Image (tube, rainbow, N blue to C red; front, side):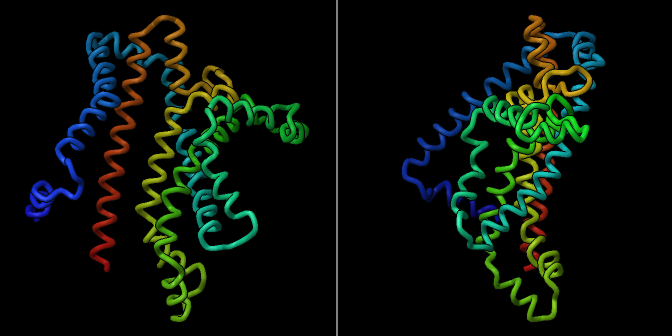
Length: 282
């Protein structure tokens, strides 16, 4: 097992492996590691009492709850919608399929503030869609549902783009084989397709969840910044910066950072075990 990495170090596939590897490490350090280290060093200058006071303020704690709950519910919604969209794009050929495929990436192309402004224009009480919800007594904009919609809109492409290539590689042969053996449609999907999609779904869900944890522009446009209701942690950091309370802002940011790193590491472990289980099953 130890021969494989040695082989690739001695016989790299890319020319100039040492240079490309060094550039990759330098780039990651410059863009990711150095800023994160600077943040943690800034927080380390605070005493434990100051740090705890900054992260345990009732308003801050409520922003954690709003952020985590919103990210969780939006991820569940995105998993269902993203899987459905990826399935339709991959399995069906219909007029406008390429347009739908291109529109999936729209949240990547739009600035989040523009996306939030667009959603707010549609969903405010006087908007095209919001007027009907308002007539039914349902408040979307500047409320918790608006927060969820903003997170769903910005994180949907992560699930679609991770599931779609796996569906394309699977083809329909396994489903047809299961059908010929007497399996129903839902059985062929649940026992044949879904296990193969599990690693991709976990990857997409983790990316969508972490993306929602740090969402700022779209949320502030459609959900506002209502304390204890729609105020998420990224907005709480912005509030502390406006108050020139930089240590408190750094402390709140460190909590979100550590939580995101822990989540990504845990999901990587789960994903690795799923890949191992799939290989053993084959």
